[in-house]
Image (cartoon, rainbow, N blue to C red; front, side, top):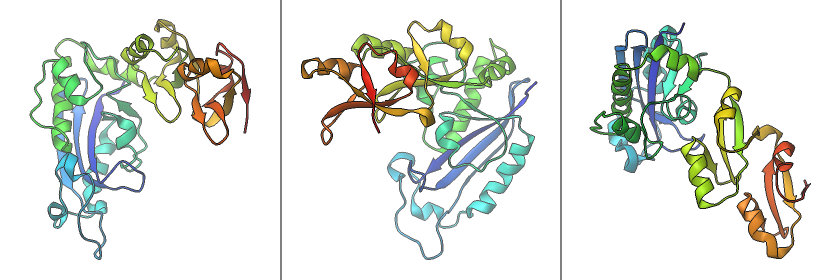
Length: 280
């Protein structure tokens, strides 16, 4: 049985792999007893001695270069987090795919509170404030690491009033596969897949979600497993006057090659209502 969760949040200079973490906050939380045990938060200065000037992301989180001047460098800043992670059974973050890129590898499984947990209630978006407000949890501030960790703690406290947290997290840790929705690209279909937890990948032109295989049967539309590493380039074999059909199926126009194309696995291509050809 899992019991201890380390709730994490980071603030960074940007969203690219080359950006750096400048704040981390965490809370060691007892899922069985539904209470926070230990919290930690710090700014960190990833700059070398010869670096200066502005840092990225200030307009979002409000952290300035001056605020980092007396902050510890990453090795010192992460040391208490390492100690707390050693006590945890699972790491937890809202939109975990983002935070885990900036967090050291602690060798523990992650749970994303956006896509892995089936929360009670309804919400208008995937944001943390939307989740909190849907559960009657007030939001005082956002986009600072400790504020967001505290919001998640209060969300868990509220949910624990009516639900057992440990089974929720054990369910969230089930193995998952990446699926894409096999639906036309129209307003009603887009709303349907979005309401079922799928996200739009603009680059790949597809709605996708990672989910356990056994949950697929409960979806009101067809899906196909689609791991990015197994995808190939396919071209739609349609006359010009049917180009809207290609667009509705997630194909994009390549002006240089004069063709409608989409990257996908062969099993997804086989579900399309028109002929496609694989091309390098």
